[in-house]
Structure formats: structure tokens, C-alpha cells
Length: 153
Image 1 (tube, rainbow, N blue to C red):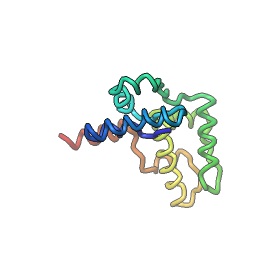
Image 2 (cartoon, one colour):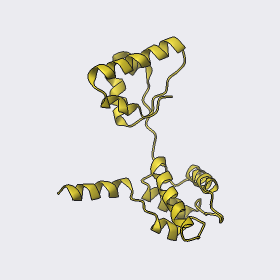
Image 3 (spheres, rainbow, N blue to C red):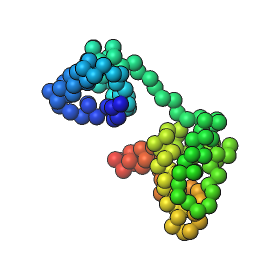
Image 4 (cartoon, helix red, strand yellow):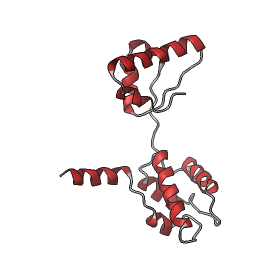
């Protein structure tokens, strides 16, 4: 598995070609399936090589939706944090709130919950709840983008 494959595009032409050749070599020599993970740019990097494009079938991961799978995910997050009191994250209202604020991506959800856990520990509350979520120093992707664009003006 090759994570953050989109970084291939950051390399210069020759280095990029060498890396793509290495992927082809690994697939041929090891005779094991390769999985590349990344943003839209990862797809573009693979697509730039006809042979590799045939070896990697693109698959878009959907954003998390408020359903039983999301509740299970949130329950596992709650169990993983070293807080002294239980965090009830898998309720329908909390699931909806968390997925909306994190824009449905697991990386953003992890960042939000990590910041909320810190906000829960500092005052001794020791549980993630509405109050600690509001205290969390977290801004979602759209909020970060808007802030940055305001600073550009």
C-alpha cells in the first residue's frame, strides 16, 4: 500500500518518471497487488502513465454519513481516547453534529475529536461532549479555506 501517492506530482519530471517506473517494477517483480491512496492528484499521477493506469482501478471513498457504520466508528474513537469519563459520541444528534463539522472525512473527524479530547482534559472534564467540542481549537476545511481566502484580500 502506497499512502499519499499524490505527492508524486510534487517531484520534477525525471524523478516522477523514475518513481512511476519503480511502481511498475514492484508490481511486476513482486507479483502482488499494489494499492495507491491519495487525493485527486494521486489519480492524475497514475493516469499520466498508460501502463500504470491499467493496473490501478480508481475508487472514490464516500464521505461518512450519519448511519450505523458512523456510529460504530464514533464509538471506537470514544473508546480509544484515554479519558476518565465516557464520551457518548454515537448518538444520532452527536453523529450528525460531528459529521457536519468534520465535513464527513475521517481525517477531519480524527482531528476534531483529538482537539476535543485535549479540551476535555485541560479543565479536568475528562469526556468529549458539546462543551468540549465547542472549546476545541478546530476549524473544518471550509472554515480554514475561508479564513485563508480572507487573508489573501
